[in-house]
Amino acid sequence: MSRPRRVAAGAVTALAALLVYLALVVPEQIAQLPAGASPWVALLRLPVEALLAAAILLVLPARMRNAAAVALGGVLGLLTVVKIIDVGFLAVWARPFDPLLDWPLFADAYRFVRDSFGTAGAIGAAVGAVLLAAGVPVSMVYAVRRLAAVAARHDRRARAGVGVAAVAWLALAVFGVSLVPGVAVASDSAAVLARDQVLRVPAAAHDRREFTSEAAADAFRDAPPASLLTALRGKDVIFAFVESYGRSALEDPRLNQQVNEVLAAGTAQLADAGYASRSGFLTSPTTSGGSWLAHSTLHSGVWVDNEQRYRSLVATDRLTLTGAFRKTGAWSTVGVEPGITFAWPEANFYGFEKLYDSRTLGYAGPAFGWAPVPDQFTLKTFTDREYLRPGRGPLLAEITLVSSHTPWAPVPSLVGWDELGDGSLFAAQHRAGPSAAKVWKNPAKVRAGYTQAVTYSVGSLISWVREYGNDDLVLVMLGDHQAAPIVVGDTASYDVPITIVARDRTVLDRVADWGWTDGLKPDPQAPVWRMDTFRDRFLTAFGAGGDHPQPR
Image 1 (cartoon, rainbow, N blue to C red):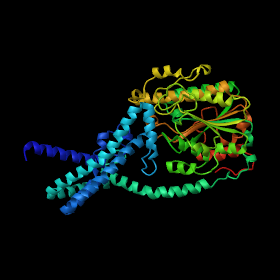
Image 2: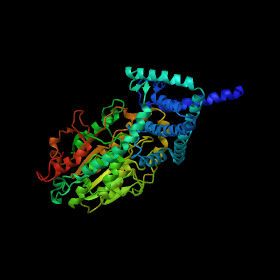
Image 3: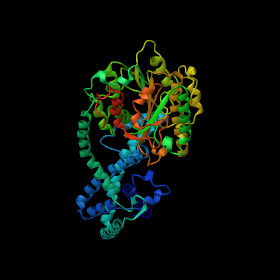
Image 4: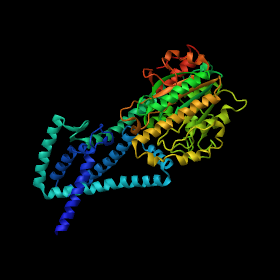
């Protein structure tokens, strides 16, 4: 073999070794390393899987070695694809990918990229993902086969090297050596990942059985309509979810200045208008995304923290908060969901008699990032079509405010309520704002965009109450989940603020024993409840006194 060919062959072998090595040692939390930790240092690891695979391949006869190398390469390739997805999930969702339950999220991810960065960007990302998913296993099979062949040609030295490395791995493991906190030098991450994927199958089956039992246990299923929500009869009750409005927006010093100023000013302005408010915290079942998990948890009173639980829940007839209002016959129930861009059969589960989504709100302006409709326009359309509709009876509405949804660029700003028209005026704001692609190059700008977006969403709702609220309004304003780790960090809680606003003090008297604090901003020491406990607490507080069982 000529020298150039030997050099080329050596380079290919080195690349194959590097590919296998990185697949084995790159930690899933590579994007969440402690502050100051070098990702390059985190790669200095000794993978036990490489030693075991090498030992197996070296002892196998030649006729079986190639088949074993293909199998090992294929498994490692598939695990590498899962690990790559895990890195993304941990960065965005603060949890690993679940290959049994999370496939529907890829469709949501495509729509998010399309709405935030354009169709071309979404198609490019999808094509790249498919090529990566196919190319990694194929490349890994080739790499393992090549390394197996090289080791077989240098059998004695390979065996000696594996033996020395095995002793080194044991020593590193016994002494717990790590160069980066939480990342052991004696690595077994690929084996752990493989084990976790296998164990997810029985775990998912167990969770399904457990959830079926939880959903079937409903203390309010048979409650007579006349006993439900008696203390709110004649009131207009609005549940307003503010996208990505989490506890960090109030308490993280990198985020909270503008938000707290809006809440403080809003508390004073609403007090001047005759309103009082009480606030606390709920612990959401999700973070960074998955708003539907939070919505369904709040409304159903059961913990919905994965897609399997969500799909199982919406196939039941469990009583939701909205359904309880509808069951009484004393309210019309309306859903205002500007983030919905397609058919949404879950509206029937929630008990909405009427649904407004992005296609029916009448908005003629541009989308701001993912958000199809600015929050102020959403609130104005609800006002014109439902809240100020002549001759209507009491309303129960859920309104989801989506302007504070990722990517927080560009962000709309408030205008006069009488200036909104069909929303065309937002085109100028959209053109003047920075693009998501530009903002996301700098984490500090992402955080600034998030703060601006939450300020806009919460400010829109406060402004709406001041402009259109009346004596019968009862507003429940809450967040669905915390923002992504790029905004709130890797150790943020799952807590979100929740507030009840009303002019009628008897409404707030009903929740006096909840321990919530005065104002739109909950005190840091305010009670924290799991979100699934809210339905029963709410139905108990506002139901006929003593007729309902106490909440869990």
